[in-house]
Length: 181
Ligand code: IMP
Ligand code: MG
Image 1 (cartoon, protein in one colour):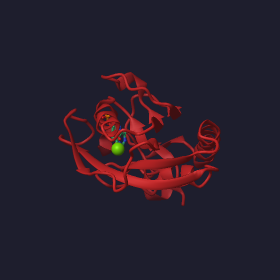
Image 2: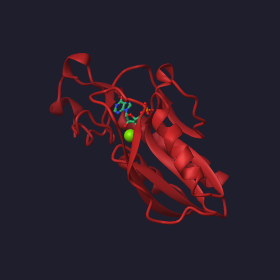
Image 3: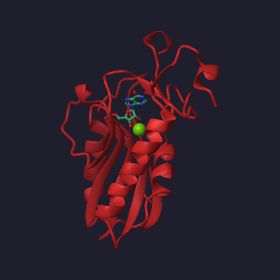
């Protein structure tokens, strides 16, 4: 699907080819780090669903999926920092190798909250995989173990990421210009 056909104002920041290459590298890294072990990939709904499905299919490990859902109080493109857990994991994390899969690390408030929630589940190892890292926006420091791309302070959509639930199905990662926000 051509991104321009959906909205000509969107500017492609990271192409589907670049995403595919980087996801392959991240999958290889995870497969090496956990060689001979099993992992649980926990996706943060809904934004990380596309990334998780691509990542999971290239990981050469015994892997299971789980999903959580959070919402941060606040409107539009700003995270308020107050996070609510809408859906917890279905399976036990106790003693397991858990990789938390997130679409984008922005202020770091969501992942800081999620790390606390997950560490309380007593995993053997907890790693964080974030497709995008918007470094200039960081408020709290979060250790991300697998990062796809570092991006500038722009609002992005596509490859799972939305603006008001739109654009998640775009195959490329695009910048949403301020006039569309
Ligand atoms: P944080 O708590 O500020 O790190 O917020 C991270 C969450 O905000 C991500 O998981 C996304 O759901 C959302 N978010 C932050 N920046 C963007 C963006 O540019 N596009 C789409 N969602 C974003
Ligand atoms: Mg998210």
